[in-house]
Length: 365
Ligand SMILES: *Cc1c(COP(=O)(O)O)cnc(C)c1O
Image (cartoon, rainbow, N blue to C red):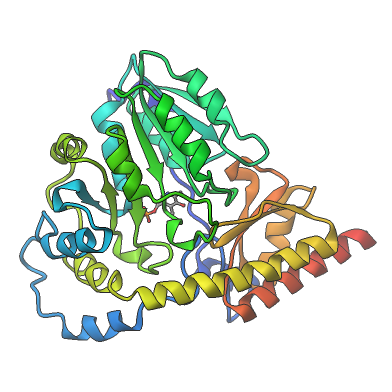
């Protein structure tokens, strides 16, 4: 077979352990998954009622233009409907952007560690990947600027960043955007934007009006609690959206995903409540870290990266034996840290107790 050279060594994405796998292995009946930053409070209760009333067709193709969802999101963001692109999760939007702009002879600039899919897609598309180490958890925007040359097609900025949870304040982001050449697309991944409470965070829809080379990505998978429906979207000026649209598969978002996302975005009271509960949850983890002298990054997301100063797989395995699936930092570029999704109050108490016991066992041995 004539596979592309660059994919021969490429590993497939390794998802977190499934609940059933862990149940079987440890003979536990209840498992809490705090590994993929889903919303522990689920989704708007209005969605369930709506699904019961769904009277669309499963036989016909979905509306490829996602018309009703588009109307709702455009009204919510106060942008034109033509400034939006809807995708099968943000993952697919990353793929579409990469496919539209990256190829051999071009390069792309991103932080490291950051969300793995920027690099992954760039490699598949044959572009050179320029990874700029985070500076104390933050994007090193100066170094990223310095890495841009005439062959750079895309710059990825993840704010708040996965897996550190850190964000870029408005001023440094604008200073950065002012200096990026206008023919380089900047992708601002805002998968966790709805969780942010920092007062110096930017309004990304305002930035889109200011910068013609910016696309913002959002998702219904995180705070909206609808990860399994696979709905993400991009916001940019019309020219960028028009250029990307031909690369989008024709029926990429499904009929139920469009239907529930449209309803979910209307229930901002639910989103606000989740944001507030998440801040309370983060405090539980901060207290645990401070009590035990563990380094963490203050988070603007629904997860926290904690450094245990030992092989992260050890922490991961122990906590899993206690019924909590978290994410080992090994595959995330932080081999001595774990990333934990903030759960409900009680889930947090449970996972923190397991981590306390891990530390005590370790101190004794
Ligand atoms: C979860 C996540 C995504 C992917 O979200 P989907 O819409 O479910 O594909 C994108 N970017 C970041 C930073 C994420 O953490």
